[in-house]
Image (cartoon, rainbow, N blue to C red; front, side, top):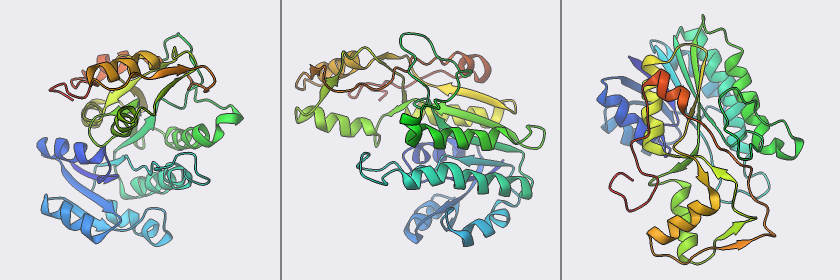
Amino acid sequence: MRIFMIGATGVLGRVLVPRLQQAHHEIRTLVRSAEQARTLQAAGIEATVGEILRAETQQQLPELLMGCEAVIHIATAIPAKVSAPGAWDTNTQLRTEGTKHLLAAALQAGATRYIQQSITMAYPDGGDGWIDEDQPIDTDLDRADRCAPVLEMERLVRAVPPTRLQWSILRGGWFVGRGTGQEGLLESLRAGEVEIPGNGQNFLSPIHVADMAEAIARALEHAPGGSIYQIVDQPLRYGDYLIELANRLHLPQPSYNEGLPQNPSYRCSNQRAREQLGWQPQHSIWPGEPSW
């Protein structure tokens, strides 16, 4: 099928694009620079230069999407310094304004499938309990900067009747693999700069970026309209993850720091994706393994 995608040059897009090409899909995408466009065009992808957050590009979207059966939104803007003032503003706008305009263009252009990347890290703290797709997004005001844009993004998608546009939302876990935040964590471990916050008992639900790409490809072809999936590997406690990571790579052992606040616990299940998409993780979350 012919697919329009935003986010093709990101860490997920760089894996997803060749996966879709292997399945003989035609890809059309929007990129921010002429250099990115030339690189993708050399790989057989139809690339247009523009920015989805600019009014002139938004006006062009219906024409750009014309003839595409499916639309995929995997665009993000994860900041290098996550705690800097305004660091998440562009990412927030991509999730809200970007989603709103892309959905409108998809409907106007007559697309039939829509895939939206989301995250599992916007749930409330689940403790030791298992979390499935029926768990609502966190509405705690203290976490509004992280969770409110996700809530609005998913609300926009879910407001579209699946009879008009067969949408699917894929809530990915914490990305691991080459080019992901895991590499930055490894650098910090090597420098002895990592401490385990609190007691380290909070759960982490990781996912290798290639397994996330595979789930999107399967959802594109097999997911029913109005479906939501958690795309995660086996959850593990954050303290155990850091210690095992250090042990496997012979790096300095991180120490516990009870004074540091720990992240919420996300023990997420992938049962629905396994059962409905025939999907399961194939790549290791551990650097150094052949399938990492």
